[in-house]
Length: 216
Image 1: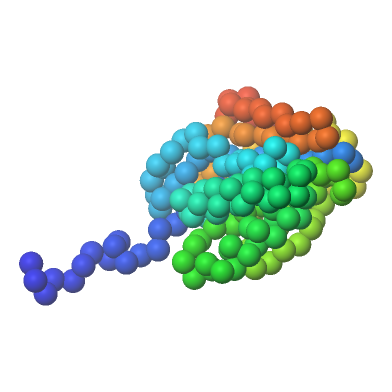
Image 2 (image 1 turned 180 degrees about the horizontal axis):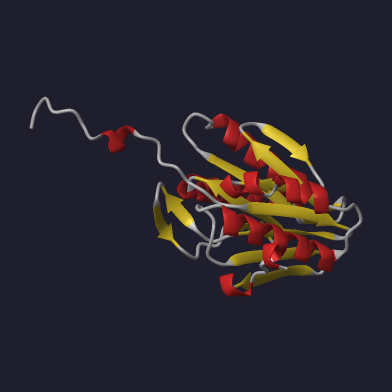
């Protein structure tokens, strides 16, 4: 009826949640994410792959609004394809991260998304970049999403400089497992992407196969 106040839930911000991570190793990077997409207390997708390709050897991990994050990834993917044709070679990871940063800053009032960009190029090797509202910083590893608050202590304690590919893959799996056990907005399966000069390897780990570290 006219004059009635709209329901409170229409004006409330929808809470989202996820866990994403990326880490460098000598010669490449490993990215990982959970697969649960939530809106408030509802799970709207149990098995979304939040690791999106930006180019052949450059990926991004998505967090925040799924629609916003996917839109940014698709825009950057298109721009990198054009850029690659113009220069006649594969783009640099920093170029991809800069595009993400520029779009995130330009539309910071309209979009709600945080992307971690990681990949390999022939100039700098494996690289991980955090991008948030115009920030661009290269880090040996980066975590994001609601689940990250549960695992910051773990990653700070367990990270060691110079870990090899297998150790980094296990580091990512352990981090995701802990976050998915503690964070109600993270869950489902774990997606992993490993990138080096030889190409890209994708892997899915079912929830039942993730380690129960606190029971060991």
